[in-house]
Image 1 (cartoon, rainbow, N blue to C red):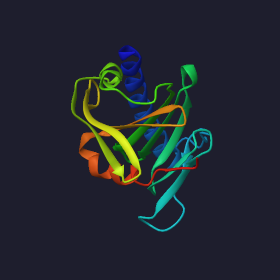
Image 2 (tube, one colour):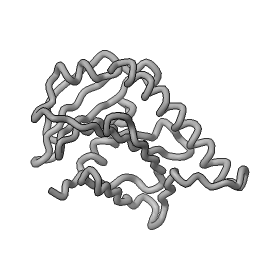
Image 3 (cartoon, helix red, strand yellow):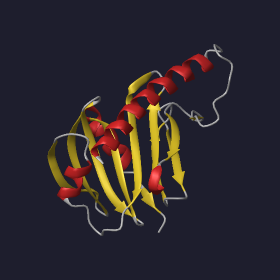
Length: 180
């Protein structure tokens, strides 16, 4: 599992850099081709948040305008969504969603799945009605990352971003809504 997470981390980093570069080239009229999987969001007023809704996993949240996102189907029913600022790949986050049969997230599960050493592991209320596990991890390629994990509807949601974006990602995650 750790090798899979490492490979996924390397893949996502490469994808993020490639997608950002492609967006800049295409947006500047450089290549002229359109990437259908890349969704560019930017309607509305500056600094206005955009609503992301996912019917398959029954959740929505607001994220900063100007981020682009791409979604990937993974093995064993998992799904990854990567959000990033086109001109700044370090302003990004990833949501990894995987089927999960247990009713709680254990510290052992986090230690097993995390891509590196874990510190500051705690259970906390993101909002009064939203409990999550939060921690800092040390990823081989990315360095220190902030992770926020929660369970919903038979799935484990793992949000990862750079540790320096802790306040930013918490403000985004606070807007998560579940339909059921």
